[in-house]
Length: 316
View 1: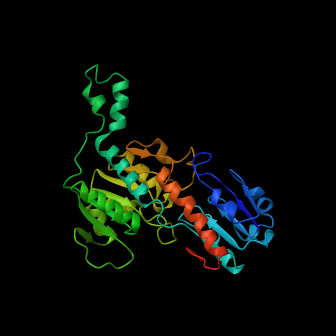
View 2: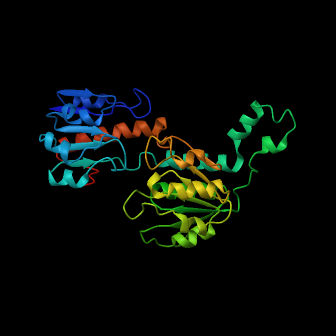
């Protein structure tokens, strides 16, 4: 049996350990990256494929009739046509929960930069503004305390709950809205999205990308937010109307901090790149060493379970 890994690393070469695969197959082929035009050729007659960004749809599946299992090196399934996989009997397994703590931590890295501006102040010092006694330059955006402010999590799955836990550790009040009804939880107030937007000093998005959540933060929702509120997005870029958010940030009504964009890598014409009061990182919240170690181990375990007749973490 052959296993093909279509994108063998996440951020840098060798950051995923695929050594366990060699005990599971006669042949293992690792491709660092695979362009769309070479997908079918590289998959060939392989029964099992491991992928992250590759768009595997009906066209690719028709060209690869031997494919039976796809292992995702991710939690999200945006890259696949799950319906086409189901029609052809191709099982798809993801890795839930591997990056929960990493993404929650990055959420607060963005929030702390918004609140304290450590990187911006370090830059201003290197530029000589502190030494020159120009406080309006080395101050840049006035810092503020998190304690006593309200942190609102939009989505209360594993990552949203972890972010709320951290927020409470900073002395923040916690609010959450979720599509899944929740029993009362000490220290967390559950409310509707409109209520949360109006009540929160920090609104943090932790939703999956679905037709229902696409553009869920648009002009009307931005108007409901507190003046000067921080909007954080470590989930998916498609959750927001990027033009509306860029305009609100440019006008100083909100501060937007995000690790994601609607189209990635972010395009030069994205309005967020030119707006003030915007902080962007290149979709790396999930990519700590600890998370990547868990990710590779779980993908290999998913495959081992499939080959043993006990498939796990199936999403279709």
